[in-house]
Length: 268
Image (cartoon, rainbow, N blue to C red; front, top):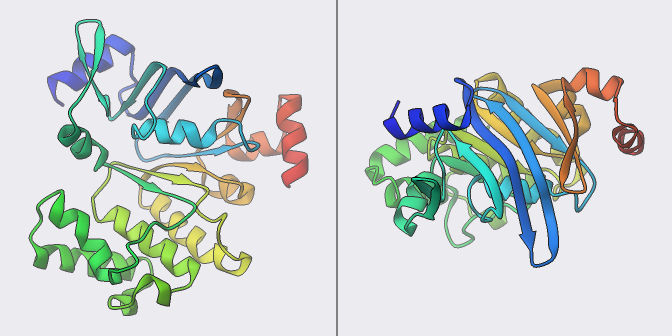
């Protein structure tokens, strides 16, 4: 472990197996406080599922993890390291764009929309970032991409363009593209919400396989059944705070907070 990571762990009390560590995370937009002090630990190799009503801060928190949103306060570390900042003394300073890109490359993110490059084939989508950001040779990137496409069940789609694929297939390509960067953690922001109901299952199956392989994942989802089955911890957010967290099966069956109970009664 690097000296910086060791120092951060000692300074902030980061657990030894932590992959995502948040303490007092706040995010404001002018007078609007979207996150009001979020604490969360996601151990390496585990799956944290975040549920809650629209506007509760779920997606904002997810975007803070990889510094797509800058924190207004608090501490957020990925693998015991700041993503968009460096700590010098007692102050945080924003890192330059090239270092931010390198750190962000270790954090895969999947959105509601698939965000594939429409003018590129499936193969070209997968090798673009590894060859341009990680400087992996093209032949190696293609070989690794073929393995990933087999993993998500799309080995026969290498030469297709996104418009020729179903929504579920596009999201599976997006997952393979994220995996091509060999991330330490994958963030999912409602990955099935834009899909037709009959296509949801194929994406969730890929996510199940990832969870079983030991990939660290933070999943904002409305698929409570998936959270019950795959999640190691379930987090309910509302009003910019974590209202309740716990083991998914236990929390879904016996929520402690009345607000959690009310929400689950509406979505189950």
